[in-house]
Image (cartoon, rainbow, N blue to C red; front, side, top):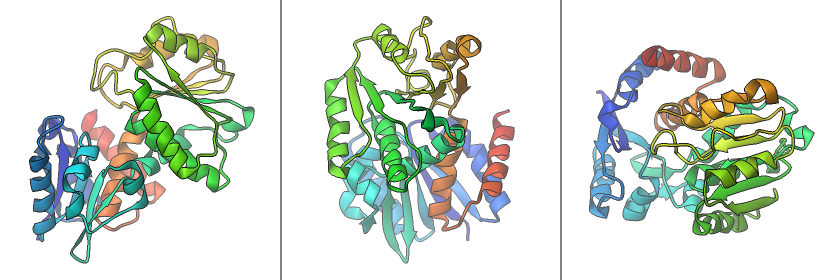
Amino acid sequence: MTSTFWFFGVTTGGSAMQRIYPLWMEELGIDSALSGVDFPLDAPPGDYRAAVQRVKDDPDSVGGLVTSHKLNVLSAASDLFDGLDESAQLLREVSCLHKRDDRLLGAALDDRTSSLALQALTPQGFWDRGGELLLLGAGGASIATTLGLHHAAAAGQPVPSRIRVTARSGHRLEELEAVHRRIDFSIPVLPIVTADAEETDSVVAGLPPASMVVNATGMGKDRPGSPTTEEVEYPVDSIAWDMNYRGERPFLRQAERRAAERRVTVVDGWDYFVYSWTHVVSVVHDLEIDPATFERLSRIARSVLG
């Protein structure tokens, strides 16, 4: 019997995963089909509840992935879950629905997938040079990234000397700080309200050498524009990481203009995208995806997207 893997999003029918997922299942030897459910942003709570209830009641549904509705799904349907992992409880969101022994479980996996992507793009010894991490945007992606670094620090792994986080809204920064207080976050964090891209440029220019700048705003994919300007000046030997893997991504072009003179390494969100999906796939289907399998699945996805 073919199982159903659900995909909660906004425009799931146009997602490349509609073509990638069947090829991944063939590679993994799993009989499963992807089924998308589209919600407008901030859909009525009843719509989210109905979708989660369907996953819960259908014996052929093994779980699924949630993209733009992680907070709303849990807020509307928390009582339908038989268990939530620690990150889902802390972040008050779910990115993964999965079943174990007919129990519907929820998990927030973005802290783990962002950590995997961060480790993959950071050269050995990079943080030993005293550089800082600058997160542009204080939304869910930044909160998950700092949570991943919290786990890394607890495990004795290298982490940045300080984290700066910018946002247009002080409220978003307060939400991030509240999460950090709950986990007793050990890395110094400097929250910064920036009114516009020019102010963000000043924050980038003030970083020490060997720092990392991350576009976690969604600008360049979900929304037009970039959090920085064409005149942005990067610290030498830095890394510019755009979490987006598709879209116009002007943030990448701006960083690439400075790459040669400032020795900036520019990285897109491809690995983050693949880690996000493969990690959910591994949890839902209860299997291990080792590095060699990850590389095969990444190559398959790239072949689909050209």
